[in-house]
Amino acid sequence: MKISAEFDGGNIECLACDDPADIRLAIRPDGQADFRQWFHFRLTGARGRDCTLHLTNAGATSYPGGWDGYRAVASYDRRDWFRVDTSYADGVLTIRHVPQADQVYFAYFAPYSRERHADFVAECAARPGATLEVLGTTLDGQDLDYLRIGETTTDKPDLWVIARQHPGETMASWWMEGFLRRLLDPADPVARTLRAKATFHVVPNMNPDGSRRGHLRTNAAGADLNREWGVATMERSPEVFLVRQAMRDRGIDFCLDVHGDEVLAYNFLVTAFGIPSLTERQRQLHLDYAEALVRASPDFQTAKGYPPSAPGKANLALCSNYLAETFGCLAMTLEQPFKDTIETPDERAGWSPERADRLGRANLDAMLAVVDRLKQR
Image (tube, rainbow, N blue to C red; front, side):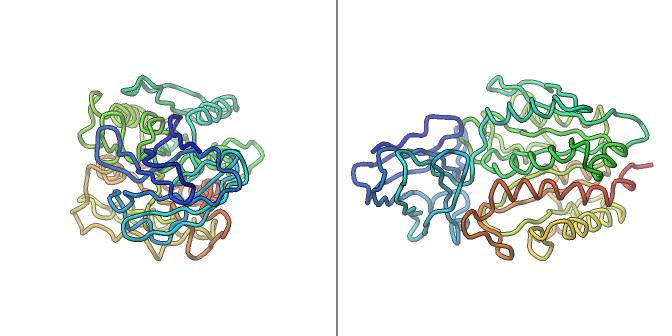
């Protein structure tokens, strides 16, 4: 048997792999920071064997509460990901599985490779009305891809949609596939109307370096990008610095920042209600967007989520708070679960790439509900 993780997005340390009943592993931390939770590795040579894999340092991860009720995902072909028997006790996450093939991949959530990102960006860029631009270069020398759908004009609102500030939250990339494919569909009446009414600015992956390195939360310098919006520099967080500058140059009336949450088994929006300059207009737009998304997708809900910050006490280093405060726009964070959704469960797949894709599509209906009121006069 062999455990390996030296590939795009891989993360694990093999401590012992001699006995299939006692495979011992450890999750590696982000390269320049003490965050760890993401894992992604391959097991070979175990077909038909009853395997028990112990992630021995699960109790020392960034969000140990996320293991309660969690099940790991597995795949034989890297396309179909399904949940496997998983338990957590005494700081150890244990995965039990009998592989039905010569190789099986395990991961925290269905991975999303840089190669798939390149293919998808090429697909989008080839569609009518889409323009691809590279905003700049990351610390590892990767391109920071940006897609504009429609032309920027003074009379149309500018809608920004970004994903993967935290690279281990791969559901955000699967969400982005559904969102962009529907937005670029010439036969979809909602997408057609939105393209006529607004200009879209999309950064499908804010953190290419962390994604390729197999990080949970940080870029190549160990920066948590969602804590860099007020202090970003080209030396530490060029991804945020470049996108923030593009927002200033091109205009911003709306931003949806797509994430994943380790602990809560729900899809929910995070408000910017704690910013010092919060207006009733911003509050009402958020509530109307959330209500429209509930109508569009039974997988989304508003009863569970993070408690709002106290008035005037929001952390302005976070993306949505910074943008809402700085530009007076509607800015929100969308969280998806690593687990299954409690209210709309799927026993085989849990929350999955396919369901994230459909939630991405549903967000167009919510955008249509507020688009006419986004342009600030």
